[in-house]
Length: 371
Image (cartoon, rainbow, N blue to C red; front, top):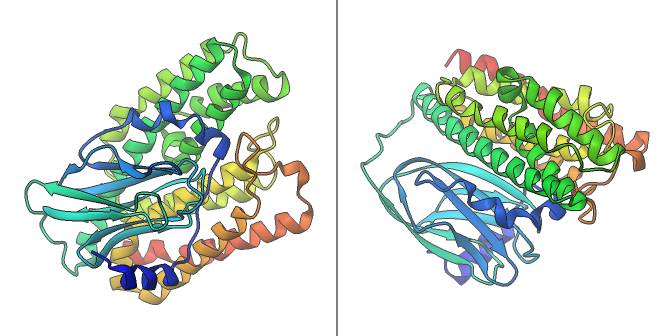
């Protein structure tokens, strides 16, 4: 365990990025527990109670740590520890933010640390068979990362289904404000996986999110849209067996991360992503987060291949996410300011920050392909 001095030293070294809709976070009580399995550690932080997890015992193997900071202003990171050793962490998760990271856990005792929370520490038990070590072989590390990313996709898709389910209830009850919150929560999960989901079912965007956005933000109505949202949910649920059979590879991860980021230039920064709501920056932030997750699963292997490149990409992600955080607006349903309030200088700065990730990340594909 990290003692007082160790915790202070750790806090002094932190940097990074993350963020999402605080308005939607108010609605997450009904959504957070949609996914509860022994390979996903669901962490929730609140101002009143600090950090909590959906359970304290999990299965050994490649796990996803998924967290939501509902309203705790004193916490901005989640750290997974084995004794004094940091197994995984995610930084800059202010109130209203969500995120996740992956970790391979052997059987044993671990601790989850949320520095600054009302309750900072949670003891965790990992049970099951020992996980074969990937060793130093980049190919084995990439295969392990691809498996972990597959679990992340499964988890995010299930959370997407939960958000759409809540949206249907809002529409059915005529609650426009709540419907907008859950619309953006659902979009966040969708955008993080846009290349994967879009490649499997284009109707989710064109026949679901598009018409719903127009109704909620141009027509300002909920009447008549339950059928569209119900059909959207059916399409999302149909993804489960398709995703379960997808054999992700290191090349898939590098390509997917690039597609997420390059889409920011053509969709979000042009305003095409949300032509009626105009909260395209929320989609951009979700895409950066999704790309960061894909890169994160490749990171252990890339450290063996080119550690300098990893450092360059880490820095670029941190700087881009920090820049996007400056445009957060907790009063808006999307958690970000409207595109209508940005000038050309803002757009150029965001484009440059995304490009600073794209340039070094573009070199990853050849690295993993030749590993």
